[in-house]
Length: 284
Image (cartoon, rainbow, N blue to C red; front, side, top):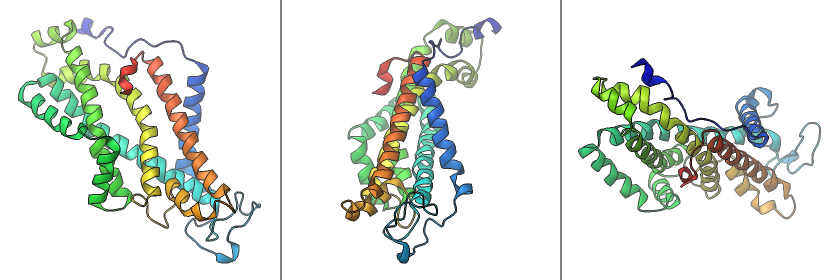
């Protein structure tokens, strides 16, 4: 069995591109800033001061203040924590649910696979956004309920991707030999099949992260996500709408932050797709 492990790792990588490496560096930088920004903040993001409302840039307030006198930079940084943090949480939970379902369904087949496919067909009968809106409406407004709705929508995509990959890999010689040698199913899935699916999962997850960030921002914008006074990029966009004519930068800052982060995650997904030599169908 030792000889079987040769060549079973992740797919052969291609030459790194400087664009991809730059995307990786930028994404890591954005996440580090969002995670550790709290330790560098000088202002309470929820503390209002109407005497200082709509102030211009200054040393005390580098990006000025909003309509309630709150420091814009502080809220922008903490808004990144909310948006990116909850997007990562939704993505990780969807992976935790979807990967085991896909592995077991693709490897065991039979009744388990048929039940899973009927459940997946039910979720995929409607567009993701419509299902998320309905679930969020039923569960009620709030960032926790929104994350739950996104998880319920997204886990199916990863389960189907893993299932299709396992169906293909389980017919190859190294899996058949492992079965003949009496290796338990759990060991075959963990040692042989799991490494082959991770390249596909990484690519889809990196591309999906940008979509989840857009979903959380959009739902917060319409009032189904983060609730005031919690700073969140989509909610900040909505709060700043009445002041777009007089203070457009209040909408530009969070909008630009969303655009840059989503662009970087898409660049990261393209880089990982080339790195792991994964076919473009994984984006579907």
